[in-house]
Image 1: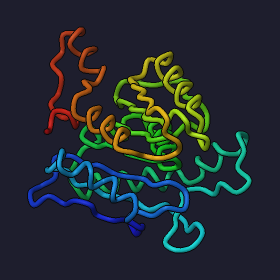
Image 2: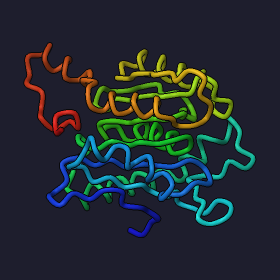
Image 3: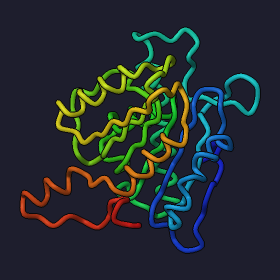
Image 4: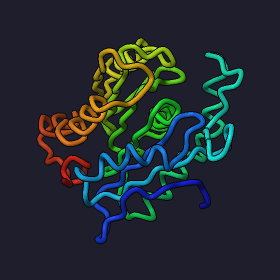
Length: 232
């Protein structure tokens, strides 16, 4: 399938993990690729790809997944639902191209890219094993969740674009629904990613043990070696 993208890292041997990055409104995959490059040293066997939004936004090379012109709490979900099949198809395309399973796939998004990543797991459970959501939110809070995907919310404490309250509400909703979620608040940070945000993201991907491992241990089954944390 044709779509705007930038390959940040392609290992010489078959990829063991897949990290897909999704930018904010009006940004582009090359710019978001700079964030992707910060993951590369910790994940040398990962295919890391920065994906562009599905449609143009503002001056080239700006992209977006859905327009925020006239967006409201009432129509945001429908705009996301309209483009979501394309988003999911894009994730599936790179999983097929890389030969990497959903269990070793991480979706990493900022702002609108984080919204799409979170909503994709709501739309299709098990699409990826991890989501890193920088300064994102759900359009509508999830009513159900599984531990197939571990959600890592990382949010600026002073975000005036997507208020921290949205991340707190997301964490509460996921926990209530039985999901697996972490929330890290970056003090004095607005709507941005800084070194502290990245440190949280790297530590979460490398060291947070998914809840489903504990559930499997309690049930007497043996955890599979296919989560991204197991492949470092």
